[in-house]
Length: 213
Image 1 (cartoon, rainbow, N blue to C red):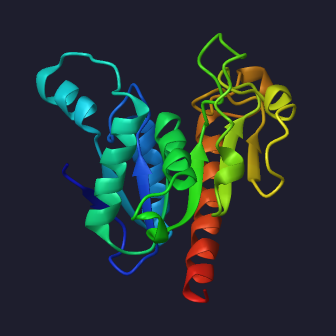
Image 2 (cartoon, rainbow, N blue to C red):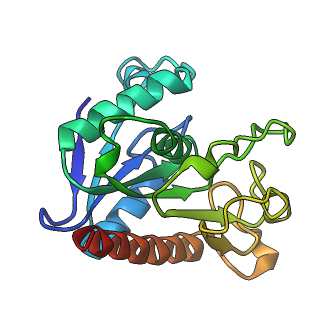
């Protein structure tokens, strides 16, 4: 898997993984990446193999099953071989939390996890929760979520009784891509900027804490 690097070589590392339906260079991924890089963070991106095949051939295919994606993520972490925050958009963030909740030889490199639009359940299937693994995660977790995300709205998420250690950054009226309705008085660019600020602060704090432990 080819890695794409942005930001200063000496910045704290954020391994930023894409969601299920869009590659590493989607508008959302690019906006967040460049925002973080401008703040001094070393952002590393890659396409999971199923997505790279889609990019290469133009043939749409679904993601592989979670165990394969987790193993692929582990191989990337191993190749980087240094302390890092891992996370991603939607599915990418979910894979980051799953690998941290399991026993992998690379887990000592994972200092924190950051999720942007976590898919707490499949679309239109709120009963199929993807939350059982959260209590097994030992690292700090930040979740940036839109209030009306259809894969986990604020009222839904607040009923889940997730670990109190999770840090939250809620985006008013935001959807799964952080886009609010016009009547909210906000826009997607503002929400992405807010997400970048919260994410950058979390990455720097996590990096500093990793140097003292």
